[in-house]
Each structure stands twice: as structure tokens, then as C-alpha cells.
Image 1 (cartoon, rainbow, N blue to C red):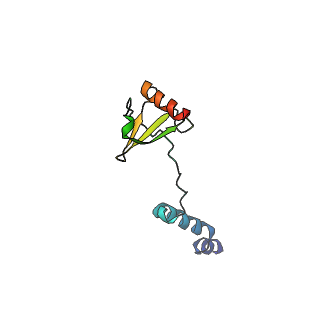
Image 2 (tube, one colour):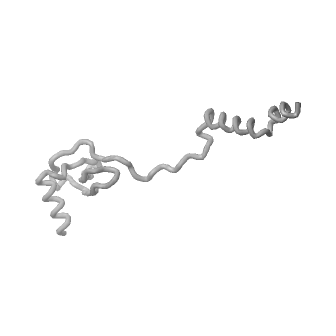
Image 3 (cartoon, one colour):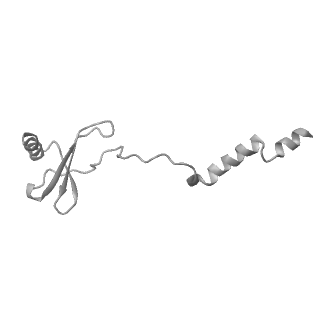
Length: 103
């Protein structure tokens, strides 16, 4: 009889664990969430173009290959605010990167 009353008691470890498990399954948003990563873990450029005229460029960013993306990525922000990915193997893009590196 004592065993039956122990498992039915609200402070019993079995009941408390089941209650917490049920709460986790029913209300996952109430539980602490892991922090969001600050960077994407994949390539940013899906489609590339061969070149953009330099008068339309506001900013050029070269992202080297790394653990999140095996490709070198060249992302140009245009003066109108749009981002365009350039093909880093295109001759015009190579020349642009070379000019950036030399000054």
C-alpha cells in the first residue's frame, strides 16, 4: 500500500519527470533555446554572373573558401543596394580582384 501511495504522490520522481517531459513536448517554445548562429553555414552565392561594370559597384566583398563553403565567393553590392555574385574564375572578375589587392 505504501508503494502505491508513493507513485501517486505529486512529488514522486516518476511523475515529475513525466510532467516535465510532457511540457517539453507540448510547449517547446517555453524552454531555453540555443543562440542563433551569426553566420550562414552554407554558400551565399547560388548563381553567378561574369561581370558588372565598375561604375555600378558600391562595394566588393571577397569571401575565401572555408568550412562552410568550398567556393571562393565574390559579392558585389550595387549602387541601387542589390547584391550580385560574380564568377571568381571569370577573367574580368580576376582582374578586378587583382586591382583591389594592388591598391
